[in-house]
Image 1 (cartoon, protein in one colour):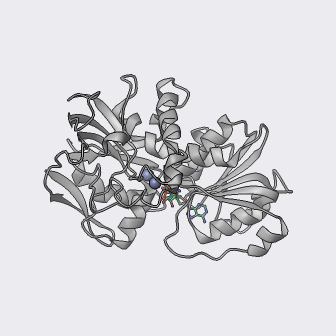
Image 2 (tube, rainbow, N blue to C red):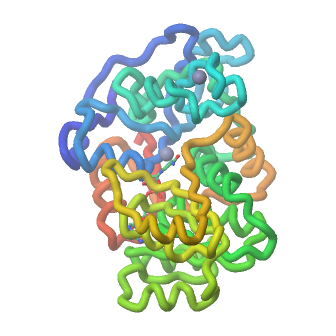
Length: 341
Ligand SMILES: NC(=O)c1ccc[n+]([C@@H]2O[C@H](COP(=O)([O-])OP(=O)(O)OC[C@H]3O[C@@H](n4cnc5c(N)ncnc54)[C@H](O)[C@@H]3O)[C@@H](O)[C@H]2O)c1
Ligand SMILES: [Zn+2]
Ligand SMILES: [Zn+2]
């Protein structure tokens, strides 16, 4: 079958791999839609591991239910792409995101489990979730990143009337901003180096105001609304300078949630952290309940995730989609893949 595999630095190619078969009870699905994630871009940037078939955000139709007796051929599903052991204290406490095995065999993030950038993929049976008929394939493919944002916002424990700064207006930043507002934030600012994305976050009603992170007077401007500092700051860029901004824009004893991923060590102004007794959280993935909650929020129309989908491309359009998403000038936020195109 056809897939898109990582072939080198910033290079993806359409390739052929064996169609997956059920193994250890796994559910095999034909991929209807898969999302391109900012995390995929990190792998693309370095070109490693070579041969990786990405795609941890997916919607598919069951072709082999494996050990899932409650599923049948033709059911529409998504799944948590992770590989928690199910036995460790983290797993037993309902926090698979802390399990040391969670990313080892993750779908679309490991060489052993090719993901949704392919005609078909295979998912661990206990992590497959049947989805309601009133949400579209594209929405289903948006469940995973939505759960990332929900988890980050749940960690921040935003109070009614809070003032929030979100750094980075990619899909993760926009979702954090959206949930911050739903949680009662009275003012959400967003900062970006890509002006089109920054302005779009305001147009999409995720944020109240956009600030250009490249502006010489950025610090002065971004703190105008809350000179004493923001209650909560989310870094959704993984950029070193942005993390410093987060630590210096938050109020004393305020909360910084680091969602963005940096493959390299970054330098921080630790003095700001110490002197202001900041609470800095890392946020990774989601719990099973948060993942399911996102499906419910879409199904009950509490959130509209389709507004973030800019384009849908076939497998031969994936390389170009990555180039668009990393150009720094395009306003696209989320591009989905439809392997049947
Ligand atoms: N922690 C998790 O569980 C988790 C899950 C998914 C993604 N991520 C990470 O979150 C980050 C965001 O994901 P995404 O899909 O939205 O990625 P993305 O690359 O589409 O968005 C990142 C945005 O940050 C902007 N940016 C870069 N430097 C900046 C700066 N100094 N100031 C302001 N904005 C800046 C970029 O222009 C870009 O629009 C990525 O690093 C991704 O790997 C983390
Ligand atoms: Zn993702
Ligand atoms: Zn575990």
